[in-house]
Image 1 (cartoon, rainbow, N blue to C red):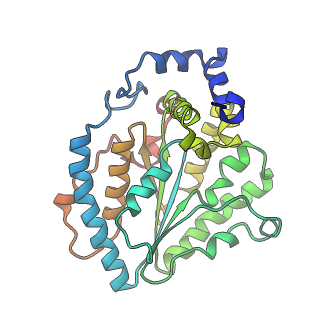
Image 2: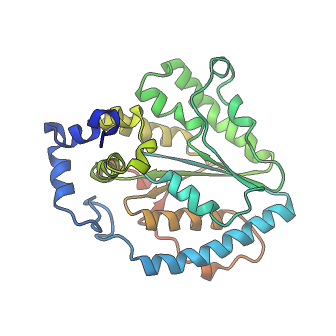
Length: 293
């Protein structure tokens, strides 16, 4: 089987620079959590996950019913490290929602025309109307991290982005949109383990991109860009919810719980939603250098 990008991910895995990551991956069992600072040693058991997941799905359906009847507008932004599980979390959030009122937006690179427009302009067209839920699988925050790390924007463009983002998000909230921002993070060894799994599975080759391959060498640059982005765009009206995603099951439950807690829908069942795990979900303070390597 030919590997995507000529096996560049496997090549990195066997390189001298990845020696400590390779050792961590090879010494771990399939169900082990690799990150040394993650609060759990093993992945969440399926039965426990499925029980909680079902209860949360019922609450999500109730939430959408309220959104439709009340005319509320909800926008969720999913950002994070490559392979952190953004797509999987969105899929589980939308699993039982009516697609007529809940859609996912994953925009490609800007066209030549879009590149000349106000940076936020192409996102505005996809914001929700009354009774709708819209989830952005990556968003305007590309400018804060990916575009910066790869040199796709200038320093002045990025500075303008940081100046305008709090005001842009404040306008959304003032107009009545419920804006919820997620940042999913995972450790470096776990990220590489997931990339290797994608590389070896033909059904997942589409999930890999040149950005993923090159990004393996830019971990520190990503970390610096993420730290700055979270710090400069954390506001009282549009706070970040950082989700530690080394365990996909715990991360998906955490995302849904936070969403349900953030939306004031009728008939909410706190017992069904369950408690928030502060070691998995928190603000930017949960992000620190000791938890990202």
